Length: 95
Length: 485
Image 1 (cartoon, rainbow over the protein chains, first blue to last red):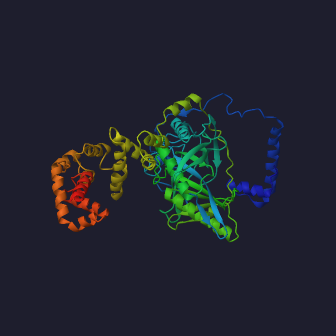
Image 2 (image 1 turned 135 degrees about the vertical axis):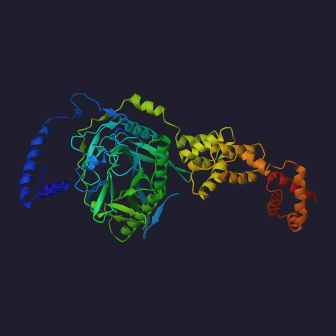
């Protein structure tokens, strides 16, 4: 898969990153190199191999349906930049 | 009963698929130990997992798995013993993680079927899949002119997304499907179906095509509809809009639209116009869900009787009409009320009283069966008085009226007001004679062959006896006297 400058722009937008126009072609080259490197894996025939989800044959651990979390609003909002003590505050997003 | 929209040149068929988001009934969230209770103060039910603090890891709630399997079985669906959580990546302020944990390629529940009855016709609607996912937080736009406030209480609550196949063909079918899903989940106890509180929301995919073609044309997706009526209205509007576009030579855009219930129209959501690229990948924080067949069988054994089965029993064993049975099973609470009432009583009489007398009164006072002032056991003692002929049907109606506002027992009301049925035929005889003497005109009309006037005369006798005579015997006696007189 070849990545061009337009694709770089698109990826940057999805990741909410600002990329200067002058950096686009260098980034495209780097991303292509990474993809080429990963594509070496295609050489392995995995037709009859199931995806490995854990190397320790662990199984998904499950919790009981219990509420043990108490109100910790102050802690949760502690790093919020706004001084509103009840909500996170963000710039207006309206549909 | 097919639904078509007539365009300029031809009739159009509507093709609809629904994605229903149903909040799972559980005490704590899907991956955290915070409460799911509705109506708490903002941000008081948020754990460090829900707010996506660094280093926090999700641990799945086993009840949510159980509820999803239970719902899948209730929808006659295939349960996938192996399913995988994936990350759906996008940025929005109400999604602290920057991704929603959802299921994509391998959902917990596969294909199934929901059966609808549309004016006597059976329609089988395919279910494509059901998967588990996290809900997002709530954005509040109207409390601050410049900012949006975020409440994360709902963030991380478990949802089941139930995706139908594009099998629905009219707004009414879509509404019926939604109601049926809601009823099934409420019977199962897996979703409370409370649409005002947002426990059940839906997205509708709508496209149109010329009648008797089978192509699938470009669809528009109407997002976040929160009532059954709005589902119907939004689809009706959207389908007509698309037909108008084709009629004027245009093309329909594949886009996300919003339904504005005040204006009764759908409009494009510009912010979401660009194609989404969610870059799904398996969530490395979570192992796959692996279920045993024993686990699934155990849940299957514990399933309650669902509306379709109950309806069959009401018709087959109790002799109710299809229509009455359909109404009685439509809500779990109605079915429960009816079953309590009909134990040891005539099912048809019980059904009549629930559907006609009780519903009429509830509707008048804007109540529902849960907060009915007359519970099943009290209505039952009233029906007993009809069945043992202590009172007439007509009197029972007025006793119910009294019961509505007083906690008194129907037996006591009847005794206190002296409403017992007149069983003494002598008393009925004299009432009939009085009416015949006072209404000679009507009597001669009857004798001239006007049968209709008989009903009126019966009414007069009932009036004289204050409704305490049995209408059937009044009818007989009246006829006999006039025919012989």
